[in-house]
Image (cartoon, rainbow, N blue to C red; front, side, top):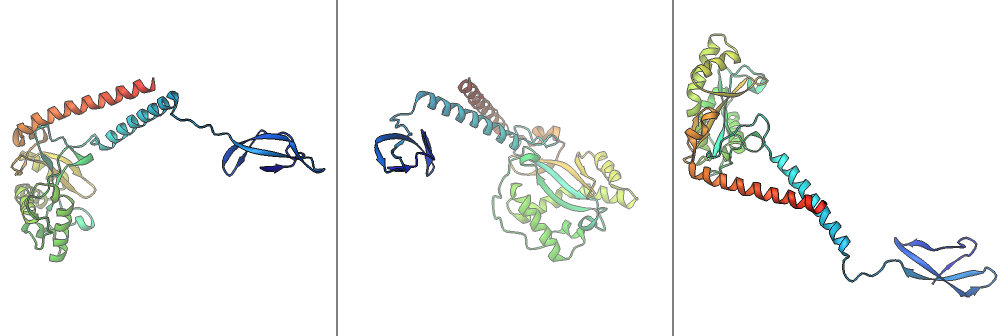
Length: 286
């Protein structure tokens, strides 16, 4: 039992003991001296329940459904491409941009001539491209590839830059290995770089270079004016061979129609599943 002074607690129905709620049941038959103290026995206010109540289970179900719907919605928003993201098309595995520096930028973007930056699959929030892992080795490059020498850095600095491009972008580009990826970058960049160099030699700025590239039939998907770079649209089909193609023509140039049918079916299944989750959640909350 617990002794409580009658004067300090004349009428106690309950108190908190060590974090648990307890109820007091007075025993007036036990008194102690002149202090008129009462002895109380502790009775747990917690009622034993052999099985969950239906109302409680329904509340838990509603909360779980609401939480899942909210989580699914947030996840979909986070995974959604940006408004200016690249769209590969349902039939295309890989799409991205060939990024070329004019050489007119500041710091690391200042070069004696226009030069390559890299081939970037537009994955995640940047576009709907798959990330296709290398079919051979993932080892980093160890030597300078010809077109990267135009950056004007020493060999160690150039290899370091090549390694950065391979690790960040090349390992999603479906290449066999790093040398193959870098060689693909050089092959794709050869003609656009020549156009940019001609425009620059004539005193042209980034806008003049963009005009020259577009006049030759290449699509500039976006420009990086801060670092003075052009991003040219590109895609690759099931053979993983990259081509410089306008975004609107990706399906025609790089489409895999077996993939197209499979993705259409998968999209319908996902939409039906999400709809069932939402309907179930709304019904549970009703």
